[in-house]
Image (cartoon, rainbow, N blue to C red; front, side, top):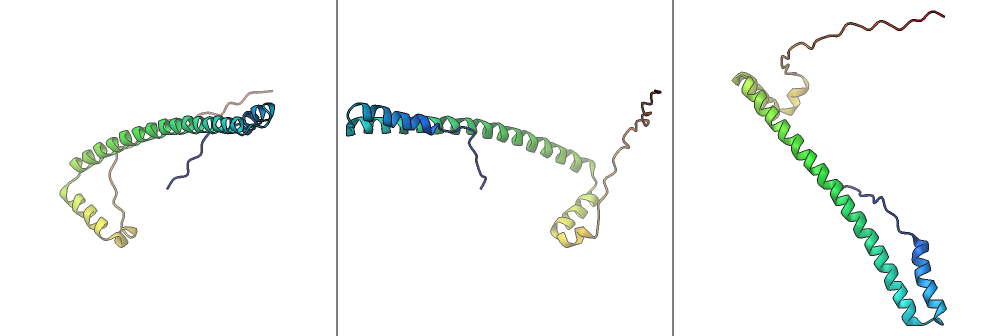
Length: 127
């Protein structure tokens, strides 16, 4: 489970004002107070629905990004498999079957050397 935090808050002062303003002005009528409570509950509900909708949009975007990343990694994996030989694949399968042996062995995949940049000269100014 993942904890979800909403970025929106409900203004309790507004709710209190809604409840008290009509109820006391109309002589303390129970019906008026009930109406104000219902209005306050509707306000809370609309705030929560807005916050949930916003959170759903964020999660949809995260899912989209994760699906794209997964697809990229699957293509990369397929490419690496196609470039490797059967001995390397069987060694990898053996390592996956025996996880304890992987701490003693390391498979090295050859990569082309990365171009190096010459070291930058420090900026020295005379005073």
